[in-house]
Amino acid sequence: MLIDDNEADNRYHELILQENNATEKIRVAENGHEALELLNECEAPELILLDINMPRMNGWEFMETYRNQGHPSRSKTIVILLSTSSNPEDSKKASEIEGVSEFHVKPLTRAMLSGIFERYF
Image (cartoon, rainbow, N blue to C red; front, side):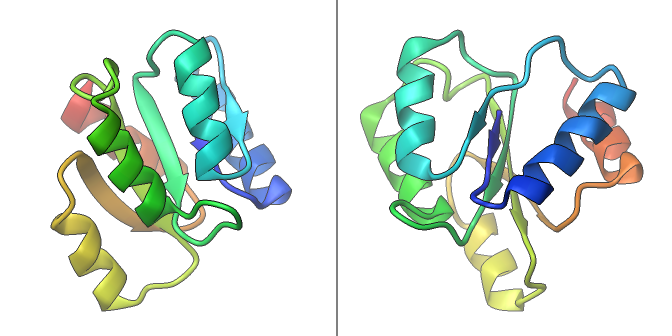
């Protein structure tokens, strides 16, 4: 699942995932609220690529709600936070949030994706 309000980032990340045969199905949400609705309607994703800065519900708010709802997918879903900013505070905050596996600066690259798959799948 891709959660990002930037259409170009979503399209690029979709291409990276498809080129690497990383998944059969990619769901896209433009904010955290939309993502929570999708999660209630579909099978649990193996991987969530989550942007931090989005309108309506940002990545931090999504993670808080996702954790508090006790969504059934939470225990087996890998959540990777992606940001256009390399702000060390964002990286530190991400490392302190239960359920966040990693923090990376956008865009997702083939090397990043390969590392994620080596570590978690």
